[in-house]
Amino acid sequence: MIEVQIVGVRIELPSNQPLVLLREKSGERHIPIWIGAAEATAIALAEQGVVPPRPLTHDLLCGIVQALGHSIRHVALTKVEDGVFFAELHFENGITIGARASDAIAIAQRAPCPILAAEALIEEAGVVIGGEEAHESTDVLADDDEAKEREVRQFREFLNDVEPEDFDK
Image 1: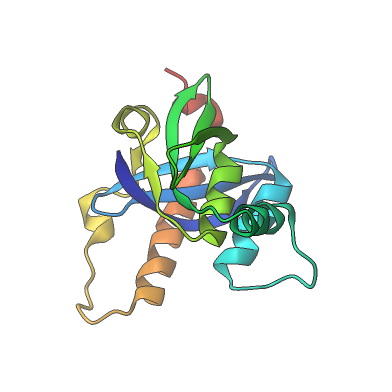
Image 2 (image 1 turned 135 degrees about the horizontal axis):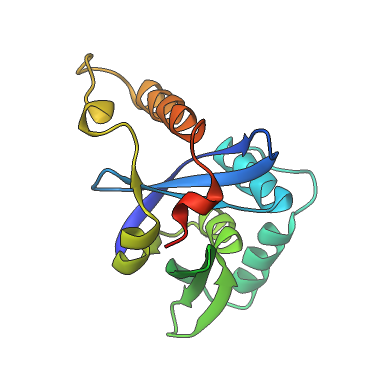
């Protein structure tokens, strides 16, 4: 398993389909996952640090887990079949529960816990955006926000020419 991090959420045009972009924490491959609007909203709100006045479903689930005296150790993106991503929630007591990838990502943000991805999943669905030069910074002292914005911009350029069918093997 390889640890990944969230790069961002965006709406892909012209389909208006939301997607979340993950990136290897210690690598260059990205994983684009097309997701539902509710999950995109939940992930984006958590990324921005917005706390809703009432708990969203993922907040509720994390609250229940905590109230029952448990914790989520990590979430794992396990496989992709026909463009559908599968995930698991791994609890501290060894219990594992299957989940949609989008829900697992939203839960990981709130737990908080690491997001791991199977090497085979990254091999199948991972893409390198913009080649090696895309990750080289001309400003060695660029802060994380600038680097993240640059990466999102490069991803948007990549998405201009990609279709979901491009990831079918």
